[in-house]
Length: 193
Image (spheres, rainbow, N blue to C red):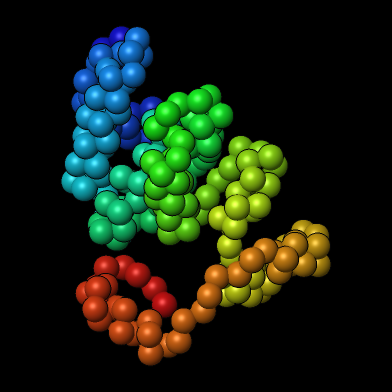
């Protein structure tokens, strides 16, 4: 079906990007389709995203966050990874050669970096959450626990105790943060501290 490049669906503006249409008959055509989609999506994101944007990055096509997250970061946008599957693990389980050995380890590292840098990661269920926890890919910043503790939570004691069980991110010193802001010219980009 031919869909318009821009649409409005239930009040949400949808921007569709161009991609080649070789289809799913062969691996080469699929790879070309993915690559053209990645470039088109990255370009659209570069043109549209700013510090007032929250980008929701899904996991289809695989590893979209590896391309989209750096663009969102450069544009000052927030992003959420919405994980519907775990790639490259799924491809590895299906015996896809690219997901095995050194290429698979590289893809996993890139995916994990996109997970660690996201504002939020949403998973479909407990099994996926357990898999990410087992791999050490779910971390919590102690300030987040403190921020949540200041709120009105149902089951407060249980939630806070569960959050405290998660592995915590490393804290950096105040002077390191100020140096990072200066080196990366983050002033005036809508970030808070």
